[in-house]
Amino acid sequence: MDAFYASVEQLRRPELRGKPVVVGHDGPRGVVAAASYEARKFGIRSAMPSATARRLCRQAIFIPADFTAYREASAIVFSVLRRYTPVIEPLALDEAYLDLSSDRDARADGEGTARRIKAEIRESTGGLTASVGIGSCKVIAKVGSDFRKPDGTVIVAPGEEAAFLAPLPLRVLPGLGPAAEKRLDGLGLRTVADLLRVPTDTLQARLGNSAAGFQSLARGEDPRPVTVPGRPRSISREVTFERDIEDPGRLREEVRALAQDVTRSMRAQDLWTRTVRLKIRYAGFETHTFQETFPVATDTDREFLGAADRLLAQATSRGRPVRLIG
Image (cartoon, rainbow, N blue to C red; front, side, top):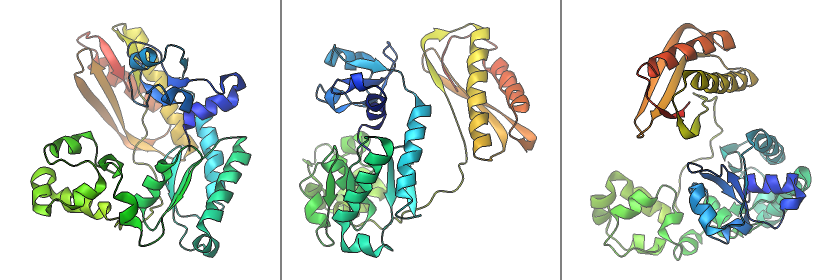
C-alpha cells in the first residue's frame, strides 16, 4: 500500500488531502510512523524523529496514530487479496506476498491481474492506492513493488531478474541494511551489479555466511516460498513517554491499559497464554524484562492484570524514572 497510515488519514479527513501529513507524535521523543507523499517531498521518512521532521517541514500536519482505523482498512485490503489466492504471506498491515502461480489468468496476464487487484482495493477502501511488483520470486516482487510508487505496477519477466536489479542501489536487497553497508565500506560498491563483481571470499570476510545469499539475491535468485503464517507466538503493546515517569500510579494505569489491549487481541484471535512479560526502559535507555508464568494458560483480564501489577512492582521497586513500558 502507498503511504498507508497517512493515506488512511487523508481518506478519513478530506481537508488533509494534498497536504504534508505525518502520522506520529509531535513531541521531543516522537517518531514518524508514516508520511504522506506530500511530506516525503521535504525528506520526511518513517522512523525519523518527529523533531527532525518538523525542522524539515514547518507546515507538516501531525496526526496521532489510530491503529484501530489502520487495522480496519488493512482487513478490507486483505479481503480483496484473498479473492485471488489463499497463499498470502503478510509482512505488515499494508504489505504482503501473494503466490499466484496456480492462477492461470495471472500467469497469462500479470499486468491485467495487477490492474484488477489495484482497482478492487481502491473501490473497496474508498480510494486507497497500492503498488504491485510481479516476478518469479520474492526479491523481485518486493523490489518491484517499491520501484514506481505511488500507484505503480512493475512486472519483471523470467530471465530478466538480474538485469532489472543490476543498476539499483545495494539497499534494495532485503536484509542489506545500514549495518551491512557499513561492513562493505571501502569496496566501492554502489549498485547491485557491483556486488556480483566482488569475489565471494572477499564478501565473506565482510558479511560472513550471508555473503553467498546476498549474491544470489543480486542475481534475482530467491528460493524462499510464500509462507502462510501460523498463529502468533506473542502479542505485545508498548508506549514511550514524552517525559520520564516516576509516579507509580501513572505507570500502573499505563501498564493495565496496555495489558487489556493485549488480552482483547488474544480473545479476538482465540488465543491463550501462560507467560506475561513486562518490558521496561529506564531513563538512560537501560532496558530490562520481567516475566511470570501461570500454571494454566489463560485469556482473562483478572490473571493477566494481576501478573502485570506484580511485575511492575518488581520493576519499579527502586523508584527509577521510566522512559518506556510494555
